[in-house]
Amino acid sequence: MAPILSSFKDDALIVLDNLADRASRLVNPAVRLGVTGLSRAGKTVFISSLVHNLLNGGRLPVFEPIRSGRVSKVRLQPQPDDAVPRFQYEDHIAALVRDRVWPDSTRAISQLRITLDYESASGWNRMFSPGRLSIDIVDYPGEWLLDLPLLGQDFREFSESTVRRARAGTRATLSREWLALASVSGATVAADEGSARRIAESFTAYLQACKADDRSLSTLPPGRFLMPGDLEGSPALTFSPLPDLPQGRAPKGSLWAMMERRYEAYKTHVVSPFFREHFARLDRQIVLVDALQAINRGQEALSDLEQALADVLACFRPGTNSWLSSLFTRRIDRVLIAATKADHLHHESHDRLERITARLVSRAAERIGMSGAGLEVMALASVRATREATVSHDGHTLPVIVGTPIAGERINGDVFDGERKTAIFPGDLPEDPEVLFEPMNGHRVSKSTEAECAIPELNFVRFRPPPLEETRGGLKLSVPHIRLDRAMQFLLGDRLA
Ligand SMILES: Nc1nc2c(ncn2[C@@H]2O[C@H](COP(=O)(O)OP(=O)(O)OP(=O)(O)O)[C@@H](O)[C@H]2O)c(=O)[nH]1
Ligand SMILES: [Mg+2]
Image (cartoon, rainbow, N blue to C red; front, side, top):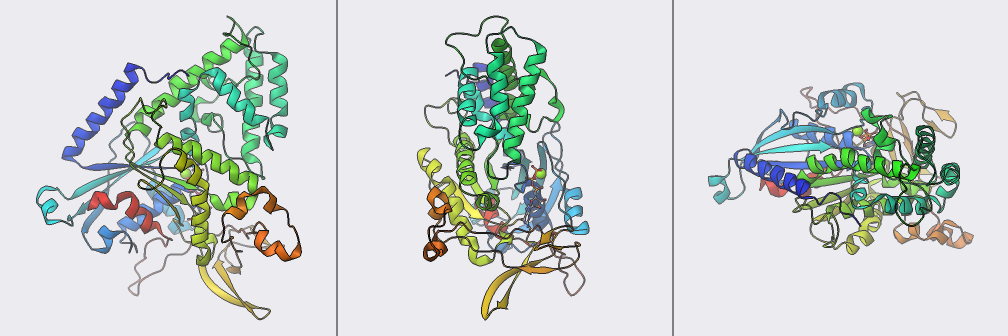
């Protein structure tokens, strides 16, 4: 294994960055909160709602500094890093609150600083602390995080692990064309731009097919192949892992040598700067997971998500022997894994969603010694788009959720116009998470065991963001949520103590 990054240069840069951060914090205390998750997991909505609730005195009873009334002033301030795009809070919140549409997808890193003036809870601290904390929120794609392990893999290791996964399960069908093309060309043929591009395109098409596949499949690295941004078409993105590499080194002038060089360029120019400039400087991290979607898609999707989360967690708590641990004195000391969009379920199922999410990360957390302090799992909705109710049906009382389906959504052939409300029975999650993880349980054994064994059929409808309630005086309240305050308490509470 070649710990490419553990060069003196990178080490020193990270240490210097951290020292500079620390020095500026003596004057202006700040905490860097990373918000990540795969695309569409709910990052933009989470940050918008969190900031809106802080700025507008939202209902945050579990967030102690707010509950106890110690926070006197909250405001947005210019962010510390001039080279990073600003998180466009005003646009996103206008979409959510004014237009009642979900904000547009965002494809790159962005940052926002929110500053709180507060009175410390302890008399001792009140004497010394300036009572001001800046929270620098950094929104970045989870796909970039999945790239970090590449820093510790050479081209051969990267090729082997990618090809192994491509030959297993559902992926085997999706990868056929790419693998055939890459095998026919052969690693040792002379390099030429045309075939390099064709193989790279075929590899990218395979990654896209995995992502689009309904049955399952979390994202695989390299992350920028799915979100190229301004790198589209550059050599650093025109490579592919190669199957069945022969022993020894890549022959000079071969396709293999060309791919290897470009893979290294990807690490140097894409992965390493992200690691150094952003990831290594975070203090706290929330990883948003669309667990409901994976549950709905079935067992293979769940185990795929479990694997992706294991890869993600390994970035936060590198083991003593790993390439990452040699690199930075760990700064991230709290990680929250949050299942989002819990408002698609009746509250009776929220704890169950939480248990399923905990099961998704428990094995990985144990393996890397991260269970317990520093890691928490919860189910939340950054924006609560539904209300709860009950309806009577055939003499039974059913718990339902009520909301306005997005225009064009269908339920049993009924097409919604974006104005009409409806009540749906969302379905139940199983009490025992294990049921979802054992392959056999997907097959219904007999009528009598169906109730215990069946994978739940969740009714999934996309709802519009809710209208904001008004006070009697006509004042709009803040965005409604589920357990957002609990997340804030875990991530930030101690820094405002
Ligand atoms: N009902 C409900 N839907 C949500 C919630 N959060 C996110 N969503 C839905 O999930 C979609 C994606 O949310 P975003 O916040 O844009 O996700 P993202 O992670 O920023 O996505 P990218 O920018 O594409 O990476 C939204 O358009 C909503 O449809 C929530 O708390 N409740
Ligand atoms: Mg986004």
